[in-house]
Length: 482
Image 1 (tube, rainbow, N blue to C red):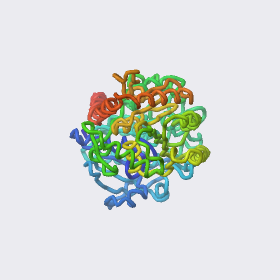
Image 2: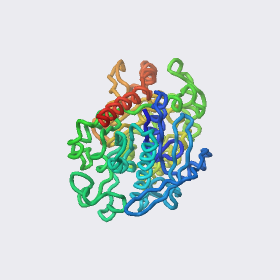
Image 3: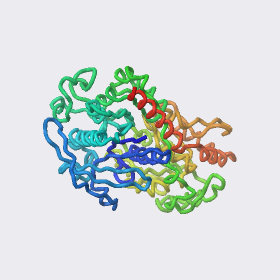
Image 4: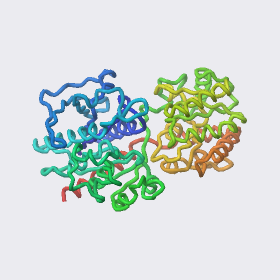
């Protein structure tokens, strides 16, 4: 099949969260399955800074958006995975330091920036169809790409089948009513059934009602977003599309996340011989300035310091956690107040607590390789990659049983004969503390190493998820052709 993906992030070039990892890995593995894959993104400065070779097309791409003529320059490239990369450049829209904003504030013209990306992608699809080689599927990722599905409905010849993946429904692209004409939404579609959302326009909702199929990043989250608690006020719209909604758990790219080949580690290891994981732990403790004590468990938190990720729950639990035999390291940035409290904790617990607010990708790999436990206290987690990476490196997750975590972590029994982590039922510091204490007891058990090997043996690869996406594509393509 010939598949067009539209996204706002791509690891390692432009990454704000897990979206970039998923887009890079999914497109790569679809290519490995034999599909032709094209990926369209904005031409951020990060691509040129990383030295990615691209060639500017001599003929710009012209289209209309909001009643105005737009001319976009197109840059062709190819990723190492074989995925074709197409970068869209419009003066003034993408040549900025951030993807969505700077210093915690979104760019005010984000709706226009990503509407332009979507309009360019659909204009490209039209060109391909008129040339006799149409895309079979157009796959949009999250709200920044959602309008492409709306625009695609206007294609008269060879309209591709359309798929929307919701990576996190908390981000919806809600814009003022006044922006409706600017982003190319017809006033006739500014209704409760389509784009309107409590007096505003909702770009994600527009994609939901326009897509042929909707996927999200875990089976549990697919059910969660149909409820008022997790639906972000879109549960009613999604309920009407429930038959077209599929949950597909994310995978791990073994060529990137593999302790047996990872060049970022002090020593490499695998599931057959985890001896060198102890060397990784000692090296990480020394790198972070923590006491090098092999018998004391090392737990890590890796993620953004925001409400969703539960960093405040970790802070609330800290006094009781640090009263036990535990060292703790945090890799993350975000809320300034939370960061300041974590910096104070590092001063209060010298040798046992460390904060790495600007952790490089390589350091994050060393966090997983050198730790015994990975704490994932997210209040909600659509899919979650942290627990998957942790398991891959033999760092046992201690996690809130919600969303994709419930699909990927099985709570350990007291004898450690079953289970792949330690789950807690409610997003409270008390439940988090209890789960960590259970894990610390298990850490002293002779069966601990067997548990580590068990989590490392889990099949977390991308082949199975990629094949499930392939099934979705074939289903919608057949429906679109009939």
